[in-house]
Image (cartoon, rainbow over all chains, first blue to last red; front, side, top):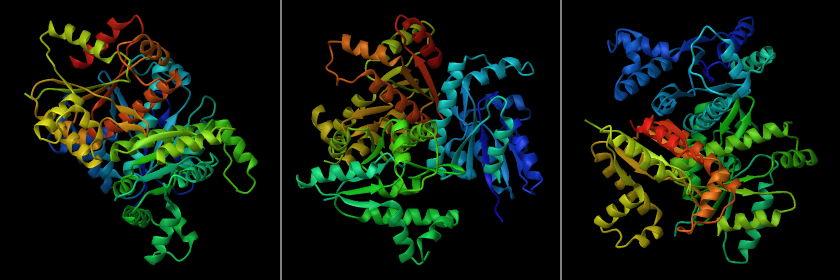
Length: 190
Length: 190
Length: 190
């Protein structure tokens, strides 16, 4: 049987991975299993096996047409995976030239996800989590900019829903309420 | 002559039908006539005549591909209707798995509406209308959740505008100002 | 070499042209050159050379199918222009029947822009600029309506990003900070 394809998104620092891992733990005991795929890593693997790049650094400097081709190839491979798949990526990526769609049309039409999850929380909570996370060097931005990014993600997710017919689920990962976020996520995946 | 296709949307409890009926009364005296179609009912009729379902309850449990096919078939039939058509549906539907596009691409490309109307009002007014309407059993949600839904509808309506070239008109149905909402709606339909 | 295609948008009165001109001055000294195209003017020129219209007034009363054809023709011609191109248009246009997509799908798929810039500022600043500009007769609207329009532009720009893979850059043109807006714009164009 064809499994479900769930795309998980959220701005950096929102705690996407933590919520997903907690949810998957809950589901495992029920016999619900998902294969986790990181879109960027998957795309690199496709690029390498297609001999387009040798190392990951080269991924950043690809010509736009090549980049697009690789995204589509990766999406086609993901579409072939059987069973339930959880795809970790971004609704949009903030770059110096502006917001870039994490799931452009040519990716969406291949994957045709069942659900896109937006993991969100209060802008200021995200700011504090970033400031307290010394393990990663992230671009500095204030909570207003974080709010703008989260809003853009909601807008672009609406466009994704129109093209694919998937649902768009907002899961709030608030401070001190991880358990609740994990429950909400598990309900989406169940 | 080909008539106009106007799609009317709004979250449950906003008073969409009341505004439309008032507007149609005004227009009737001017000789402007619209045929009203409820998208869900129309889709069920198509499904029944195609022998896909026997009763309306079966509509809720259709396979995703069948659902998509039926939506498209219904949209094709609506596109054939001559004269002015008013289509009652939702910009997005709130489900346990998240927001679902009321007008996915395969519906829009068939209908190619002239206008999509978003009937809106203050989130709290909608909450109060729902609490006071005992005739319908609706899922409970707070005014913040209603606001989120209205915002999502605006976002997805923007995507609809890009695909079809239709206009997106916001008509406010505020407490005590039904007359004004009906005038605004009539101006869209006129 | 194929140049970059940058689309500049912003609600009336936000100071789009001023920001662009300042940025282009900065870039000129660096040898970065852009050809500026006004989408509306360009479309009129195409319509005239195709003998669809004789004068600009006729552009306002075109049949929807003709309008669509002309938009697409203009976009095709813009796509052929070599070197860097800056396209001045609107993310959405406010009409009596609602918001109209400035860049419907059939335009975007031809131009395939690299960047769409949204020039924005505080709603009330835009209102004051409009009130103080006596050289243009603009439709009157309050700052809340301006805010709604700016929000709609962000939403529809997200949909544009999904279809084209372009970035969406927000450039704030705040009172007293034109220099900063011009720097931000120059960074996008550089």
